[in-house]
Image 1: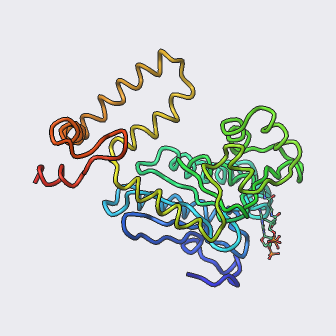
Image 2 (image 1 turned 90 degrees about the vertical axis):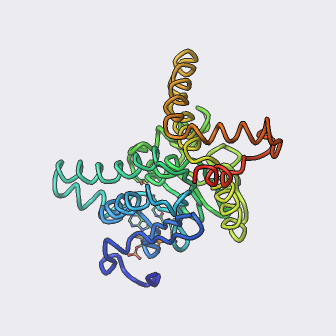
Length: 288
Ligand code: ACO
């Protein structure tokens, strides 16, 4: 991994994202610590490549998105994403937007469960990938802010939408208009992240959650995470119908898993679904 002294000018596109895979978990890092991991076009392009490469790898069951250094991400790069692309005209601006939104969208509907591990600063455009991750855990020391108002723009690139998805009306309004930061603990209290922990304990907790996810049926995880996002925009009737169809579609990818799970509970009495996941390895053995 590159040293923190590397300047952005020297840092290659490939080096703007770091990635390690181990024991079923892909640890993906924003890797511009010297620029507080703000997102420039290079990073956005590279992140989409990395997500693409990892999505269907059999050795990856969970993806964790975190940041190198003191930041998770200081939002969009004010120089390279805004000033320099705007100077090249509307076409360049739209192209840069597409590159950023493309990987956030990809992450929102990612095949594997995703966890944001927010180790430090998280501003503005960073709310896009924050919301794109299914779960989020933050350091108590992390600082979150919609700082757009502090430099004279509205929270765009989805940030306003994220604020309204995750926060109450009053909190979202205060957060967007005041441009103040909140720490990880407040972010957890407001529902922006699942939990806040001291930075020193953050990785262990995220790993524990990732390990628990790795024990679950992956087809069911994908169906459930998409369902949680989709139903928030549906009437009750539409959601009921969508969920029936989503489960039936999931059955066509993995009908044996749930049959094995029912068998282990009803016939073998080897586990209780209310208290934990069935043993997937037995299913794998019986399919061999
Ligand atoms: N865009 C461009 N450069 C940035 C950004 C950014 N969003 N954030 C940090 N940098 C650069 C700084 O210009 C500086 O570069 P330099 O070393 O070449 O001078 C380097 O990163 C380090 O930044 P510092 O400000 O020195 O770091 P510090 O740790 O003191 O402060 C903080 C961190 C609070 C995150 C500060 O950098 C900051 O306020 N950044 C901007 C946050 C922000 O408002 N982001 C935009 C949100 S709006 C949007 O995303 C649409």
